[in-house]
Every structure is written in structure tokens, then in C-alpha cells.
Length: 107
Image (tube, rainbow, N blue to C red; front, top):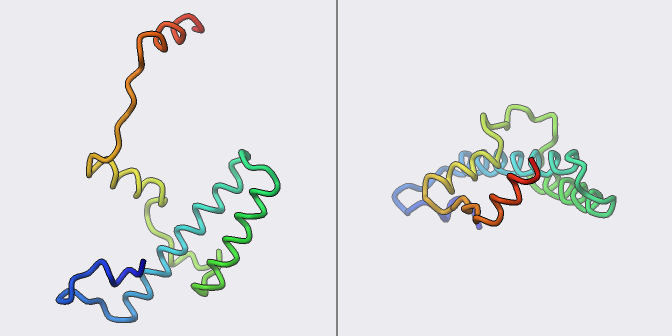
């Protein structure tokens, strides 16, 4: 979905601003994907798939890891989590009594 579609007609963004926002978003997504490749939880095929995705995004949006001016103050995962929490779209699962008991026994 294009960023501009989120704005009503009276709030249209100039083309340059729209492109700047989209580049910053793409840069944040690439940073997220890079972080995932370094977490150690992926097998080699999954890592390779993420590398291909990163290359595709960098080519499409004409960005690179050296474009530090595109970085935002918060990582994308924090922005996403804060949005979910703000809009009450996330619930923290309650621990069932059996889970509490087994957790206490392992301590």
C-alpha cells in the first residue's frame, strides 16, 4: 500500500515528502531484516532469503546501509509494538495456574 493512500485529499503530501517517507520506511524494514539475520535463529536458507529481500528493497528504493540519514530514532519493532499497545491491539497472555506451578517447581 502506498503511503499517500493513508492521507485524505486535503492532506496530500508533495511527491518529494512522500518519497522521503517511503525511503525511511524501507530503510527501517531493511534494518529490521538485517537484525533478524544476526539473531542466530535462522538456518542458512532463511538467512539467504532475507539477504535477497534486503537486496531487493535496497535496489527498489535506491537505499543502502550507508544511508544513515534515513534512520529513525526507534527501531521498527518498537514503533510497531508501541502502536499496538496504544491502540490496545495486543494482549499479554495470562499465566494459567498449571503454568505457574510448573514454573515455580523449576525454580
